[in-house]
Each structure stands twice: as C-alpha cells, then as structure tokens.
Length: 116
Image 1 (cartoon, rainbow, N blue to C red):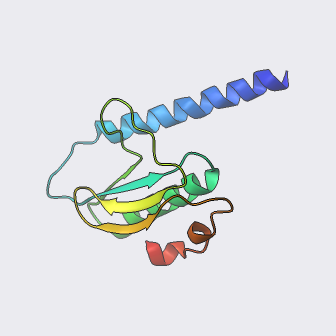
Image 2 (tube, helix red, strand yellow; image 1 turned 120 degrees about the vertical axis):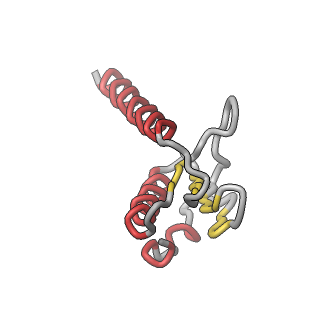
C-alpha cells in the first residue's frame, strides 16, 4: 500500500509540474517585458522552495516581469546538478551557485528578501 501511495503522490506531483509548465507556455511573450530565468536543481526541495519564493517575490515587486522556472531549452533540458541560478534571459546573471554539495550552505545562507 505504501508503494501505491508513493506512486500516486509522484504522479500528482508530475501533473502539477506539467500544469505549471503549460501555464508558462500559454503566456504571451512580450519582448519589452524583462524575462527572468531561475534554474534550480531538482535533487532537493530546498532548491524548488527558494526558486518559487523568488519567483513570487519578483512577480509581486516588479511590474510586468516574467519569471520562468527551469524553462526547457529544446528537446530535453535538465537543470545542472547542485545549481541555483537567477539570470535575465539572454543577458546578465544575478546569482550563480553551481555544483553545490549537501547541505547546500551557500544557497541556504542567502537572504531571500535581499535576493528579491
């Protein structure tokens, strides 16, 4: 029964991710609006939690900004392992933490309010 519950929760999580990706794709792209890309590792929920926190903060604080979490680049895109990066699409990189190992101290030391 526990395997069945785990499988159901995994399927539910996949559906939520697919739905959020479809919502992002459905948005009409406007070249005048700044587009921020947040690439985060899928290894640990700490990355996802911080990425969502930054996304919601930016969308609330900066009018007209578009924020994408792990946008697909072509056929298959997997974010880099241990990566937490915030950058403007095709431009400046704001934060780049690469190849972090557990317990992800550099990322956890960030003040998210300051980052936003």
